[in-house]
Image 1 (cartoon, rainbow, N blue to C red):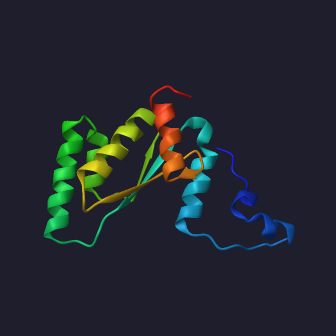
Image 2 (cartoon, one colour):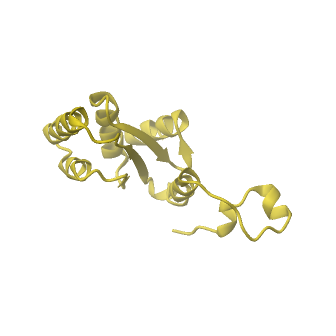
Length: 133
């Protein structure tokens, strides 16, 4: 993985010779996914709400559904409330992303892929997962 510090700075900051910049978690994850784009690495950012009985029920149900669909490694990490899931297989990432997004109302997920986020990341991952690119 090759990543340049300059990719984390805005163009106007670079032009002004800035030596410091501010980043948020999304900037870091987008940069990571962009640096790993040639390896087709997908990152799922998991969003677990504050703990209450409904959350635990939803989490347990989601873990069960992931296991039933053969996503045992994903189920184990979700049961541990891992915040970032990093996939090196676009097909597994696509399947896990949709299982999580469709099967849990209490747990959210954001996809980062090839330096993209949101719908653009979904479209690119879909193409790679289904051999259309």
